[in-house]
Image (cartoon, rainbow, N blue to C red; front, top):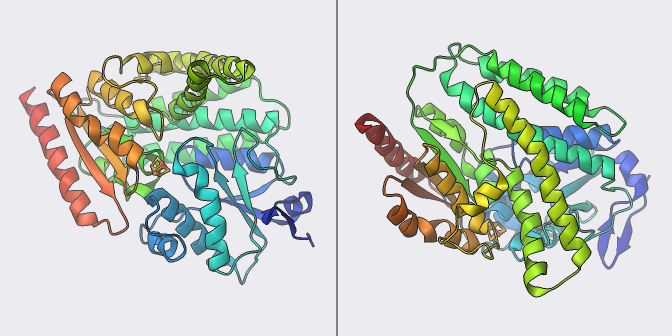
Amino acid sequence: MAELLYENERLVFTAEMREEYTILVPQMAPYHFDFVVDAFTSEGYQAELLKTTDYDLIHEGMKYAHNDICVPAMLVIGQFIDAIKKRELKDDKVALIITQTGGGCRASNYIALLRKALIKAGFPHVPVISLNAGGLEKNPGFRLTPRLLHKVHDAMLFGDLVMTVINQTRPYEKQVGATDQVHEQVKRWLEQYFQHRRFITWRRHKRMSKRIVKAFAGVSVDRTLIKPKVGIVGEIYVKYSPLGNNHLEATLEKEGCEVITPPLYDFFLYSFDSRAHDIARYGGPRFEKITLRLLVRYVEWRRRKVRTLLKRYGFAPGISYKALKQLVDGIIDVGTHIGEGWLLTAEMIDLIHHGAPNIVCTQPFGCLPNHIAGKGMFKKLKKHFPESNIVAIDFDTSASKINQLNRINLMVSNAFRNLEKK
Ligand code: SF4
């Protein structure tokens, strides 16, 4: 039985706990996190992805966190506490893992809020692991080894790849459910893929990417169907998580649209690049700046190969990070990088350039940075791109689904009208 060990009042996830505890992972991005959990389990962790997606979980979060805090924090805390409550009689050997960015945004403090909430809810014995690449907190039972980091990087690349091909296939499939069937198959392939106990080579990754793209390209589709393309942008959690955005992707598909969600990896590249930008501008370790820039280049080199593959099989690939950054020239400064910052504006411009002027900008309550780079930029974007059809959807503690749906429907009917005019 693992002993509880505290360090500066923080409960540490010890090496013994690694053997006995199940790590609960919040579902932040459904196309990516299945693979992240595969990567964890392949490295010997018992990890479980939380799949609850009922927006009412926010009330669980509100009970234990201050209701002034931003919505993603409340949802994640609510989902964790709900999961622990449901399992408690069965097994209380659980730990929680949460990302900690270390940036200027409140996301860096979610971990402290979560620990406070656990004490309030009567679970002070549940350790919380910080998932960060900057060594913000040490836990002997959980180590981001180079091999695990590399697997997580692969999981992100595969997540983006799968999301792209699914979004471009499912709305046009001739047999309903065919794309989802291939998705399930791909999940099984990747579960095995990550079991590899050695460093996964680029050649292996390339082979698997090709297998995935080929499988989706094999789904029978009707490309004569004309559907409006609708992009989803916004705060990182509500943009991807069905729990955070009330199943926005499914809603838009049901309304007859093709959804485009920008790659999740862009956000990580943006975070690395923002740190390098700050060091260059305000000073800091030169070595860190060079390492971050090299990292961005390395990931981009790999993504370029994936984009070529997508093109070869008839899918529309995204653009490079460098090209994305250039889009905001003269519109918003690239020093604006709290929250999603300039990236959010760049994603909207990219969507407009690529035939998706219809955009849903997801805005959680309490998220000042993304209100500035999102809603705050609408007027400027409308001036530069009069064809844009952007709607901001607020996700707050008392979000009324009807209200959200009304606004989405209005945007969708404008999208259809504009398509007909064309
Ligand atoms: S980006 Fe917005 S929602 Fe996310 S932590 Fe920051 S303030 Fe909160």
